[in-house]
Image 1: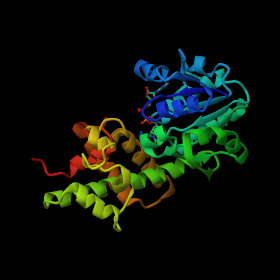
Image 2: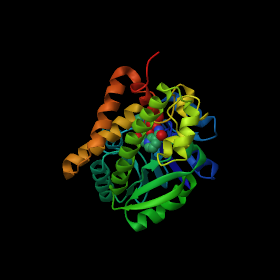
Image 3: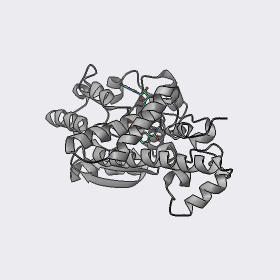
Image 4: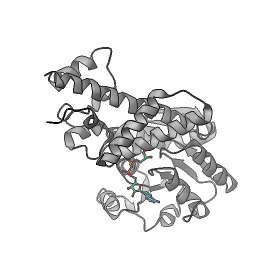
Length: 295
Ligand code: NAD
């Protein structure tokens, strides 16, 4: 299949590479020349613009940072929808506001284009391994069209509901992730302040009732998990500012639906303070710095 892939960052690049490895013809585009060079080295075709990428494409996949990037690309200055052929399937895997997914989907439908939201979980490790979890918002028929492509990038595919529902599921998950990373950081920092070995303490908690995803594979303390961002100077991974965006989406949603999310609100405030302190570009697990004893 001829696929256009737009947005080749920490997540998009390995996802596009997996589609290429599965035998699809992938034409990739990103605003960053470095990002393009990386996928060109893996054998992918590189487009000169988003418009160029979608020429002749039967499917388009986007993996962009936030709502404004997705809306800007499809409906704004880029007006990419006008360049996409009728009948094309568009899969947006970015984590954005459900309302934005619905707005773009409505415009796509008017142009005869199938647009679904399919945000992911599983981190950069899951993107590289092709084991992501997809949370899809769209019709049964649209998901059926997308499934063969999603299966090349992920291991779990869930139909959350109508368009936008994937985004709602995703922000619920990420609100929990943001909270649990702060909680896990606090627990490890407390143990270390009392002279415990972070590796030993993490293993005890992993096998006990405090066990969670961070303790399994994304420990915030350097040196516990060799491949986690914490052991690489908090480089790569899932940026603090992206987590801050997701916690903001969760709070906006909670306000609109009058839901009570006290820990989600507190977590947003903690990541905001962490970002302002200069850690916005680091992986979100660097939030442990907020609770670690200095010196
Ligand atoms: P990233 O910042 O590493 O990559 C985003 C890429 O999009 C960049 O390379 C940027 O140049 C490109 N871009 C921005 N606007 C563009 C445009 N108009 N045209 C072409 N390219 C454009 O972000 P990421 O970590 O890959 O995350 C992407 C999305 O996936 C975000 O919504 C994020 O919340 C979500 N997500 C990330 C992770 C993770 O672990 N990193 C996990 C799950 C979901």
